[in-house]
Amino acid sequence: MRKKFGTFVLNAVTFSAKCWLSWCLLFVCTWLGCTRGGSGLRFSHYRPAATLADSTPLPTASIVPASATAEVSPAEQLPPRQSFAADPTSAVSQFRIPPELPGASAAPLRLPPFDQGQSPQERRSLLEGLFPELPAVESFPQLPSSAGMDLSSLQQVAAQHSPVMRQAMAGVYKSRGLALQAGLYPNPTVGYQGDTIGTARTAGYNGIFASQEFVTAGKLTHAQNAALMDVRAAEHAARRTRIRLATDVRRNYFKVAIAQEQLQFHRAMAQLTNAAYRAQIDLLAGGESVAYEPLQLRVLAIHSGNNVIQAQNGLMAAWRQLAATLGTPDLEYTGVQGSPEISVPEIDFHAARDWMLNRHTDLAIAQTQISKACYLLRLQNATSVPNLHLYSAVQKDDTTTLNDVTFNVQVGVPLPVFDRNQGNIAAAHSELNRAQQDLANQRNQLVAQLSESYGRLVSYSEIVATYRSDILEDQVRVYRGVYERFRGAGDSLDFSQVVVTQQTLAQVIASYLQALTDQWTALVDVAELLQVDDLFSISEYCSPSPAAVEPPSGPVTELPAPLPPAAPSP
Image (cartoon, rainbow, N blue to C red):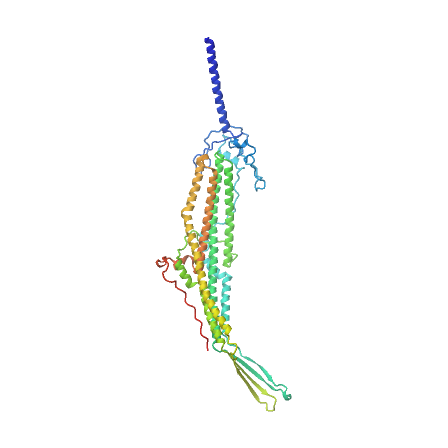
């Protein structure tokens, strides 16, 4: 009985030991199946804290050995998703890249097998074929900042070489010639005159004659004064042309300056993306990354290189436009001095408006047109007074044997019975009224343009200030923080956040450059309306004053009243 009982206890203990070993083996197999990806390896993705300068970090997780000859694809490195793979009709199982998509013919990226005995440098050399060097970008000549031309020098070159100014001065000389011609007296008329030729078979009367029109009522003076107003208008137009030429030079100057700054920023961004791409390859060589991560950064790095190429070509295009504006289209590239990141001059709207209304050439031209209309009205009133016509002839009388000399004299004036120049006088009055209204219209338009340009200047100045003080620095901090956390946080931070923050940084820099462009464009527009010679001294004429802080309580000072039409000359 005791023998049977001992046998029973031994069998029970043996059975229990076998069950315990079976459960242990099952647990080990299950754990191995979760940590193996097909025939490849699966790492724990532990990312030690590191900076961008750490090029060869080593993994600290354990590695399950696998076949050394197996090739591992990115998809095979991930644990199997049984819930989707089991269903052949699921969207995951049927996912395919459309063949019509550019780049769809690219072969899948397959990494060489990971050998635990390889060093990160050896692993890096194996990955060089999969992640080649970035395409080289042609270097652009780097010129010292002192080699370029400043804005004042560029404006002087344009004034000397641009055909626009010569055209404007030709218009002034033309108007002066027309004013001289308008005051010249009519020429006399002389000639031969023969009368009653053949009478009684004689030669008749033969001799010479002369005639002259005498202009009355000061018509020539009025006509010349009206033409002199055109001379003044042409002189004002020449000054306006000089201001517009300076404005074109300023616009193209800032295009070149901002293009230089844009090229510098894109180069820095290309260096950043290139460094991030190289660092991610080092992480992949150390087993701390997957294949698509450095490949995505390579795409961004190449895109940054393309931006550098575009910035270089844009800079040369801006320089050629500037050279053409100067009247020297073959001018070699030297760059421009000055930085678009300097602060814009501070301008007060009320002071700027008063300065503009007192000096703008459009208002001066409108004022000369009013004066011209006044002189033309005087001329039309004087035209109703007829001019005096004198005719005289000296002839020899060949009809008799006496051969006497005869004289003929005619003096006449047209009688203003029907035509007293009423229609032209009425038209001159209407022209004077139109010129006066045109002055008020020009004034309103200038104030409206100044309001719009000044509003843009203030807005973009504040936007640029926020970029400098907050947005740019904050976005750099965000990118640095996200990347460092990605390096040290492992799987808790998605790699896409690094890509998004890097793209956001590039977009912020592009928006900052556009804000700089809009700011200086607005300042150039304001300077064109104020018609100042020096852009950077504009605050000396339109600086804020205590009286201009609050809107004026009284009426705004008006321009001088136009000349009144003169009464008809007797």
